[in-house]
Length: 316
Image (tube, rainbow, N blue to C red; front, side):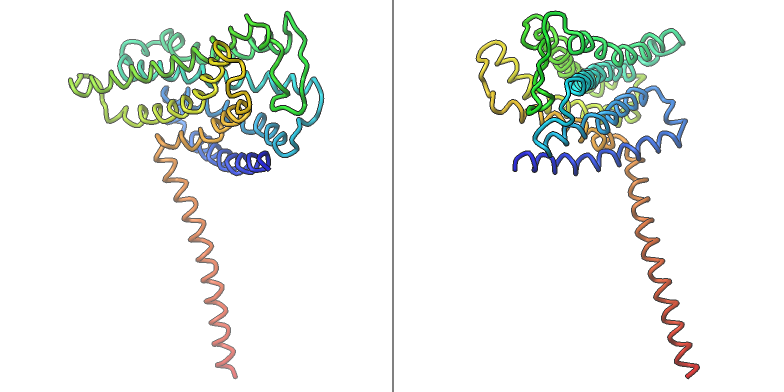
């Protein structure tokens, strides 16, 4: 029963997440002037990775919650699923750290650091590329080709159970620290620093910064960062306690904490709209116009029927 409820909730959220993502992609595809702005590039990469999670990772997880087993039950499938799921989560965490750093550059140092081709390459494109390629390479070694162990998959557990490297000590600690804990901690610290700098800059009326122009960008970043921190913090905290204090701490609730992480890609598209009111207005216009058109067609049909009836009565 619990699995059925989790499946139903995930299915409902996934439908809206895919629809909102498509609206955002269509909007940027139709507006190249907005698409080419630097502050939108990282968001588009994050949303694209999120969309891949929605269509590749989430359906497999939903299938597990529906069947209460992994399907298909094969080692190769589990290997591919775990590699992609871990890589996608790490990419999202790394991208959030870079987006946080980039917000600082765009707000406080855009004139100095982001002018010139080599500076754009160094402070804009290369970090995004590193965020995209580094996690898959790392998990290719940890999950697909583990050096010190052999994976034994459990088809009755979400994500086929933990990969074997998580039990080896060194590799498991490295993964937890470098690919999860440090990015999450950096995200928190950079958020705090950005809040302090924004408050200090507005109070001192720092010259050269158009706060009104940057307001939507900053608020959108805070909304998405808060979502990441809120959903990842419980699992990271429990994992840290299990590794250092009590291995059995909240062991029965650990699967639930893993399930909560799936709401990251499910809620992210709606959260991105927080800083995109122009897209929200277009969605409202689209829905309103469709409803108006439906009503208009119905009114026309009824009007024609009434006129026909009146003509028949006149003839008689």
